[in-house]
Picture (cartoon, rainbow, N blue to C red):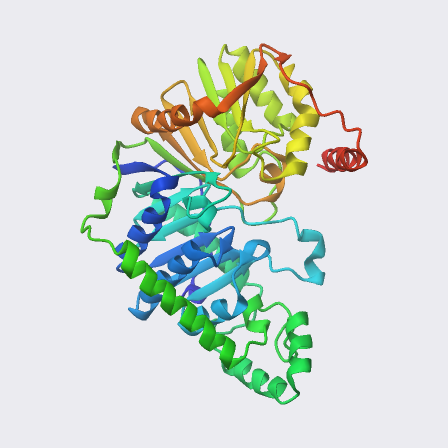
Length: 465
């Protein structure tokens, strides 16, 4: 089966009746989780990426995917266009190696008004029965490689029939892209090779101009980006050498000696009905749909305690209503988020500062900020010490109405305790900023010109949404 022949499958948020296991994976094990899962593939690899870098970890992962493709195993990659930070020659080389690559919402003047519509979901699906999903992206900072700034992330590995639903969602994404392009073979490079030869004859200066524009005159403007780029044979050769070296580095450092993929993690047994998969509609996403609606229902059901970990805390009107409902039921609500010192998105953090007073007035809730030096990137909710939700969803505007998101919901005390244990490991780096409706820190006053501009943009976005 080729993915271009796949029929769109309508994903639904259904409760599974099967059994299996789940394991929480944090930063120290994140690289190993990716590598072990890809190594275990015998039939198929599907990699859904939001952000992908061609740094050390990214190159090793790409080299391992190429190795699987060379073994004859179908490999599908679906990457968000705005956050594909991989050299075009490497992408083209992977296509030549018969890796099927599709790009979500490729940037173009014709779709300028939809530039904010992004695929924020992330997943690795192996042979239709193993699923890794959560908040981590493909980059050194998410697996804590190298010096500098790191992201505190949480993923979950699942062996369960629910993987079928995640796979259906992934194929929906691919089908949505392929339905917008003519019948073409994604990995074919005949037309591109002819075009490269024509441009090469025009001289190096002209080549640079064409590369800068990233256009290919003979191809439809809506074909996926790597096929429109004019890449020389020398660049393709260099890309191959880069991945060859990455594969050698991987074999020297991380070659797995384990036979049992599940032996690498602390498995938590799943019983029938203990797991749900949630996803957004591929097109025409709106408020209170898909994951957003699932998160609100999950929050409203809290009776005793609600712990929410999120990198960005911009609670919209709809989400405030859900929190009020939980508070009215007697639940103690605690938020754990980033501070101005730890955030990786200053504008979003200022939006949180701008609305903090309004959030504090909701009632008996607590807010804790992370002191750094790294960034909290994990996104999960724990309810009443027994249920939890691990997701790609942030508590902000983009996740609510713009980005495609996914989430898994567990009724499993062991998985829930693993998340709380992870939080306990980092709790000393959090400090209280709101308790019982009182703010315990000095708020940003938006007096500087740049802050006033950000405040204006925040208000404009809120009015628009």
